[in-house]
Length: 247
Ligand code: G3P
Ligand code: MG
Image (cartoon, rainbow, N blue to C red; front, side, top):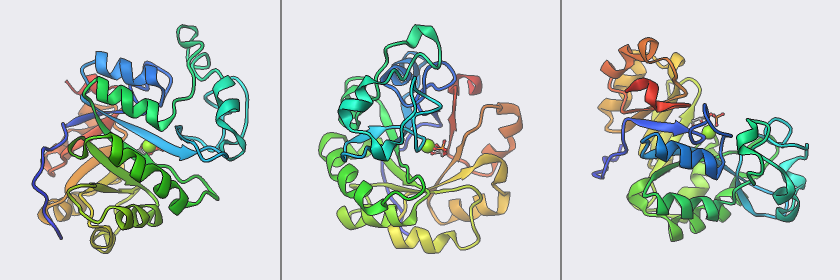
């Protein structure tokens, strides 16, 4: 498996922005992460019905907005009418859904790094997502502060088709439990990193990933004591709803 020499991302990233203290995946959540001293954030990206890439996790807006609609049925104009902050707390009322472009601009302004997750909710097209998101992101954002990850192998393969140089586009394989045959996936997309659900990671799998020269990240950990043994297994970084609990 390929080794990459690069400027490594930090040990702690804020999950969906500082999602413990601000509405997830919003510009406000990224500003809060910055204020909390985080250098990197993890954010989810998907397409609205009109093809606009937006920063959003769920397949609909029920949980995180003031009205419900399926993302695949929304236009940007309709999405902008939603309040995506008030559900979290009154102080965030009036927050609007962020487009990918707006989010990249804010991250550049704040000099932050980004783990962008290509989020494929049920029935969505992985190639369509990669084809919109990858060129726009690479055009706007510094490659050394970017990792694109996904649970979808098809999305990662489509991304690798678009940018074949593993240094210009670092790809992360997302898993719940890291499978025995993770190397096959890693080779296929020339992966930079493996991202596993922290409670399901085993020492053996962690050591395999590190021996192969890949980075190893864990999500979503908010309990530093319970997490602690994994640092010794070689874990390079943790995605947390509030990374400050690890300091
Ligand atoms: O990228 C790690 C983590 O965000 C994956 O799960 O559901 O929070 O997007 P989820
Ligand atoms: Mg995510």
